[in-house]
Image (cartoon, rainbow, N blue to C red; front, side, top):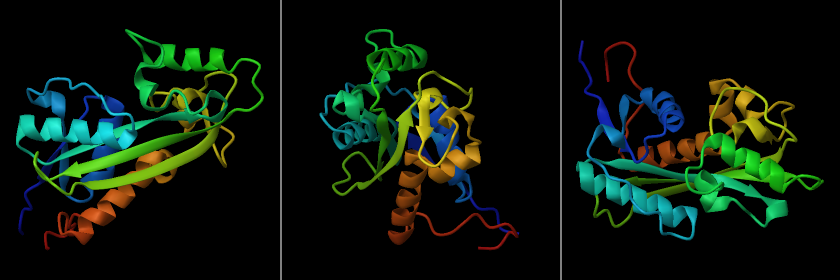
Length: 213
């Protein structure tokens, strides 16, 4: 029986919720996802004006600090009635010291009395082989839905408790991890990334179950 060495990729984030999602979806390809806070990676200023720019900034910074291939995720919530806010500022929407709860409570307050509640999560993923990678893989996907009147559910993270995905009558925080991975912006973007990584020979196949390649 041949033991396959796990390929290590650094996730340019310390967010435990994101790490769990990436780890579950990439484990089948014998890839170990390591959070950047496992290394001496400092925080980097997200000075971009788009999700793509910020994801590239984070991926390159983590690759420089670790010397490993990296995946960076930049994602956020766009609310139509708020002209796309909070957008790239989703994680810090409620200001200094923002928490997931304070962010979605501010959002609910901003939408109070607003009948138009359509919204979508956006996710951009960037894979960099190394810090000087001139052609990083970039994948983007979205998840349509509406903003609920109040939070519900305890799974997920971020704005999940107030986001009702299209086709569901519950919040994203009430979905199972398997349901979320199958429908979410991050799940769909990761499927695109996996496909691109296969096409470029970065990952070869699913993890063997019988000890053979």
